[in-house]
Image (cartoon, each protein chain N blue to C red):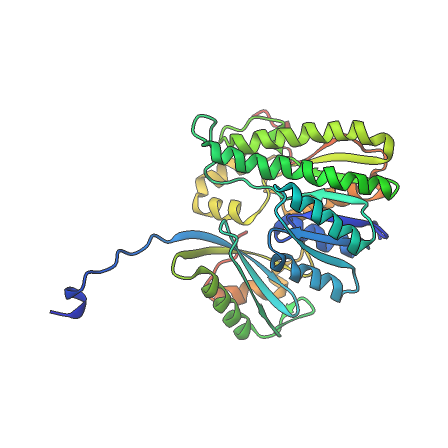
Length: 109
Length: 255
């Protein structure tokens, strides 16, 4: 009998679905989850003049940050995105959707 | 620059329309007090404004608490040297807010505390500062549901936005003679994170809603920010007590 069969399993906690609000500046990326309002920030060096300069690093940082805020109890379903240029920026030209997709998430729009 | 020399306090500036407004107002020459529940939420916004040569300060507090509103207005005045614009953007619409028959008392209390008392308290301490500055503009975010019924009810939210609209008109009449204009923006559904997520999960619901919007799309944060920018600027110097609708034509649509 395996150890898993011998020991009673903890019931899996229900995961709550959240949406992420990503804010990207030249020096930091911030994620805020809704509706829980949980948030985290990370310093970055891959966003210059409104463009992602290193998609791989961006994806890594975004994935790390989301992993940090969602923990075991939350699942992030998708992200809205804003940069320090404000609303109305053509996101496709920033390279952020590609980085977010590489991180395994989806931009909500 | 349309807001040069103006000091603006923006609530709910940590995300969405509030953050977009903070960045846009600053780009138009305003100094900005960006307020949200947690300071960390607005610090990046403030930092990016400052890096571009603007003036901004991060303020933390709960708009539903009078003491927080009093302190926040003091902090904004201290940091910016006065106030010319109050942009009451913060608001909530919890998922457990439904029909009046189903909605629990605690939901009503929370929604009315944030959406109505929050606006009232910010105005209570902010309007005297606007008068001291020689006049200014109060911009309250109401909703299109303050004007028409919605068959997918969120009754606490709807009632709260009706209250915001009525309060705005009362403020317009009281303080207009002292140079303070008060106006409400009534947005239709805006592409916020929660709305977009829900609509992606429910394509049929998305299609049903889009079908009701003559412009054929949901609103974007910048649609509302552009209206707020007009109200914050001197361009709106004779606009007072108005309910400005930005809803893609929903409230004009019978069928």
